[in-house]
Amino acid sequence: MLKVDLYGTAVLLEEVGKVIKEGGVGVTISSQSGHKMKDLGAEIDNRLATTPTEELLDLEVLQIKNIKDTLHAYQLAKRVMGCAVKWGEKGARINSTSPGIVVTPLAIDEFNGPRGDFYKNMFAKCPARRPATADEVANVAELLMSPKGAFITGSDFLIDGGATASYFYGALKSEK
Image (cartoon, rainbow, N blue to C red; front, top):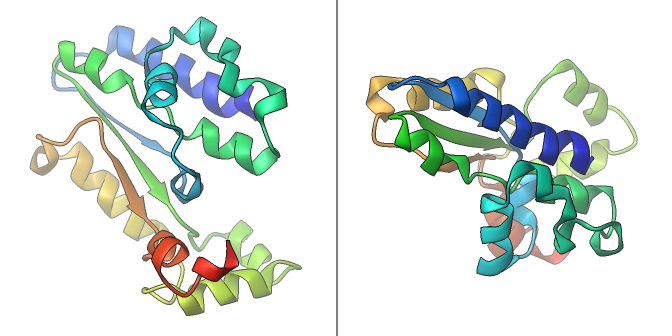
């Protein structure tokens, strides 16, 4: 999980960053899941953001003994966003979106599968009371890539209908 999601994304962003031109814009898709993780602290966040790509998987926080399970690995992989500074030196911008559950054929299978009750409960207890559509997530990406988003860079946009807020402060809090 870390080699693909974290390292793979870091390599991709580094390589695109080498050829990005002034005015270039990138938007990555992350996940709501990373927002549910406990705060790692400024030192670890800094290391995840600034460690050279080839040394990233050597960080202590990413060693197998420190990874609780596959969900934890997935959440850690969604935390890298340090390339905004490097891209900014070239006059380019980079942001990420962190969608919650989006209605896709795979998600529909999940809704109707063994975890269906989990999802139905989450939707019932989050402010939006439903999953997102792909168009709703795409609308945020469109803004970020358009001239209307020209001042936005180095940011991550949580698009989850308030599920994460409910997880920390609302009806889903008791289900941590």
